[in-house]
Image 1 (cartoon, rainbow, N blue to C red):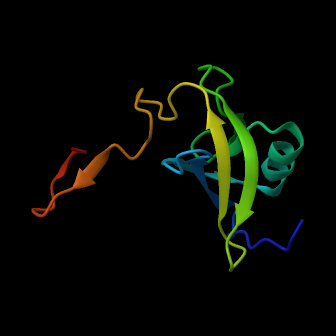
Image 2: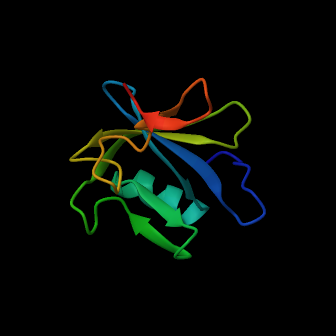
Length: 112
């Protein structure tokens, strides 16, 4: 594994994208252990900062992410998981966590 650059808490941002459409589904964090587990199991595994614990996407909801490829950026400080998404990615029930936009007045609205 390359010498990834983790933050002071041992975390690295992970952007999750649909492997076919390249739609951004969500963003989360992972530690080295979750990245290794993701690569070995092909199941998207993250680290929850709020619960201070590992979580496998879809373990309780059934909305799983089968990882097709793990990409790393040029600075070695951000990853992309290309996934086959089963069900919705967002805990709100939306397909993507990015279902809102900021309009020209600075207000948050649903994507059109």
